[in-house]
Image 1 (spheres, rainbow, N blue to C red):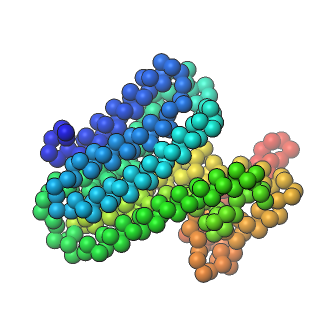
Image 2: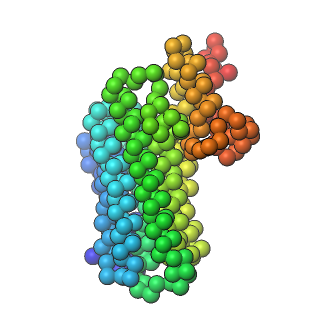
Image 3: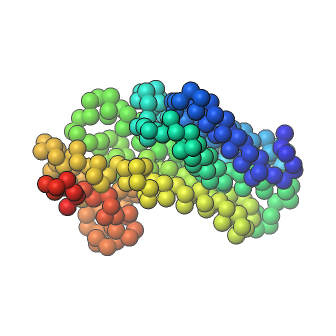
Amino acid sequence: MLLSPNSVYADGAILTFGMQFTGFVVAAVLQTEIFYDVLGGINFLALAVLAFVSGQGTIDAGRNNVFVALFAVSRGWLLLFLAWRAHHRKGDSRFDGVRNVPSTFFVYWMVQAIWVYCISLPLLAVAEHAHDHQTDAAADAGGVDGSFLLLLAMAMSIVAEIHSDVAKAGWVSRGRPGGFCREGLWKHSRHPNYAGEILTWVFAAVYATCVCGWSWKVAAVASVSPLFTVQILLNTSGTGVWNAEGKNLRRYYEDETIAGNYEEYRKTTPPLFPTLFVPYESLPRGFQRRICFEWNRFEYRKPSKEGKEQ
């Protein structure tokens, strides 16, 4: 049961930070991070249940249930992937020297709580609005068809992300033929999984704004989700594109058997979003930098003899 008729945001915060704090206590006692990522995935699904329960019996319950279902599918896939990764790695280097320091370990768990909550804000915004049984005229003007088109776009983004992960896993299981992945969507994007993740939350934020009457307050809250995702995937070292490229491209450039092919792949393939019918290499470099996220930080610089990047 909700704490009060109009407190979905608060309930989501209590649920999220409560789950992550509990996870921290157990993990600190056991001095392990083995279920850190998995609990993050479970937390997302718990918020989906909260949103589903809070939205029942309202005018927009039907299409909002579709939204909740898409959210659950997206985060359910994440949970499966993280569970597999935790089992496969049998540990996480991010926590080396951390799991035995409770104060620092606590920060890691609270950062995950912030991540889960921020990503889920479009879901919570829709659930919060569902308590108002009067459908906004502005939302009606936006059209039910428009909202379902947004849901369809969100679904396609989720499928693209899952397809990318499956294609990459299949390539790895076959022994990494060619040295780098060009399976499926990886032919058209260097990081189609991240592109799918970003688009998922962009469409989720727009959908939340649409069904909530195009309220600027809802737009501001919901937009935190895609902006936070972009920040994590593009601007945070150790994660996302920054972690996958930059100095970590060394494994490609120092392997003479694939270096030339990989350099050609980078020249013809955008970091995130496919350029469709326009060859990527034909675009001006400035356009690639500003619009296609071909940032300097993602380029490989061969270390000098002193061990510094050139």
